[in-house]
Length: 238
Figure 1 (spheres, rainbow, N blue to C red):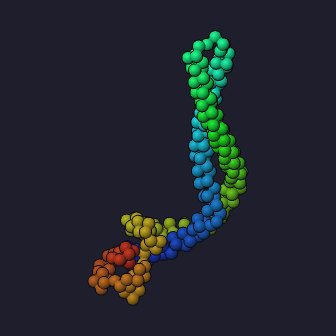
Figure 2: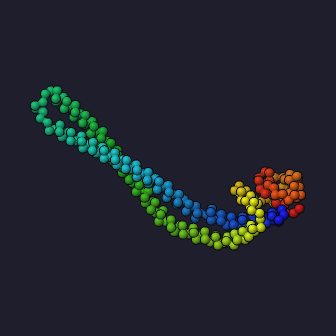
Figure 3: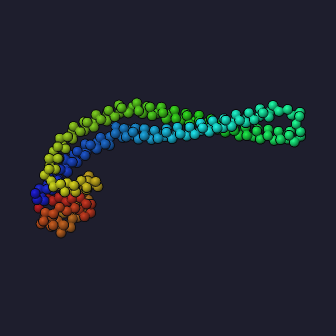
C-alpha cells in the first residue's frame, strides 16, 4: 500500500480516534469522576492518618500508665515516711526526712503536671480520632451510590464508543503496524499525531515545511514527521 493510501487511512483512523477520546474525556473530566477520585484519595489518606494517630494515642497511653505507676510509687514512699516515729529520731535523721519529703513533693508536682498534660493530649487525640472515624464512615456510606452512578455513566459512554472503536479497528487493519505504533508514540505528546499539510505549513504547529521535505514526501512517498512538533505530515493532494 502506497503513501497516499496509508496516510488517508491513518487520517480517518485519527478522526475516529479523536471522537472516541472526546466522548471518553467528558466522563474523565466530569465532576462525578472528580468527586469519586477525591473520595478514594480521602479514604486512603485518612486510613493512613487514623493508623498514625492510633499509634500516637497508644504511645501517650503508655506514658500515662508509666507516670501513674511512678505517682503510686511516690505515694507509697510518702506513706512510709509518714508512718515513722519522729520522736525517736536524731536531728540528722529528721533533716534527712525533711529532705526526702521536699524531694517527694517536687517529684509529685512534676508528675502531676505531666499527668494532666498527657491526659489532655489523650483526650484531644481521642476526639480527633472519633471525628475522623465519623467522616470516614460517612464517606464510605456515600461511596457505593457515587460509584454506581459513575459506572452507569461509564457504561453509557462505552455503548456510545463501542461502534466507533469497531470502525477504528477495522481501519487499523489496513495500516502498517509500525505506522500505528509510531502514531501511538506521538499520541503520548499530541492528541492529534497526524497533521495535514496546508499551504506548505504543518497544521499541527503552523510552522513552514521546508520545500525539500515536501518534495521528498511527494517523490518517494516517505512518511516524515514535522521537524518542529514531531507530528506525522499528511499531504492528501499531490
